[in-house]
Length: 162
Image 1 (cartoon, rainbow, N blue to C red):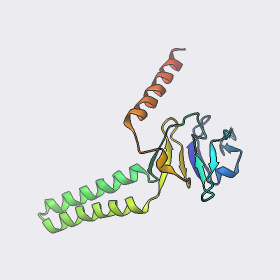
Image 2: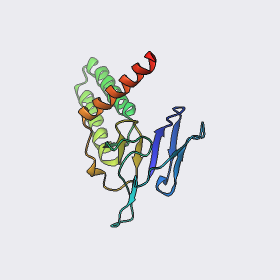
Image 3: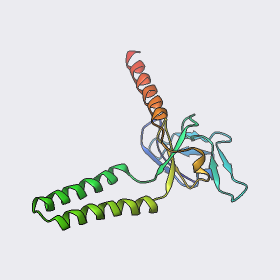
Image 4: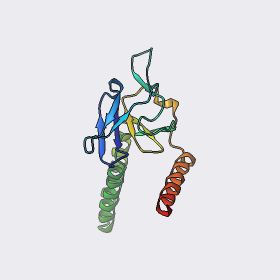
């Protein structure tokens, strides 16, 4: 199982492969070590795959399944496809316009099936790949996301007031 997260101390990016074989996650920038909680990773008896029960970086147990693909790149692909189709539409080339739109949609469908899933923590945004039984956590829930977003906003405001 691999982890990609931001260091709680310095916000530097952390990537650590085979985290199930480690006792801690270490930041390469500030060398802060985050201990992996006991029972956070369980090895499946069926196929010896690591199974995550909670986030390794923060105390949250609420994780969701998403595609392990950068959202900005996905939006960029759609924007480029839309811009190219607008140009061909301006030249009144109907065939090229729809060819560009359909090829952009086809690329999106291909990426959807090719890109693997990952688990993401609602609270700290840590992403986990190579873990077993992701479906137990479910897909993105806006209500849960909003709960953690509001909590972070309150903590930030109270930090400024103190």
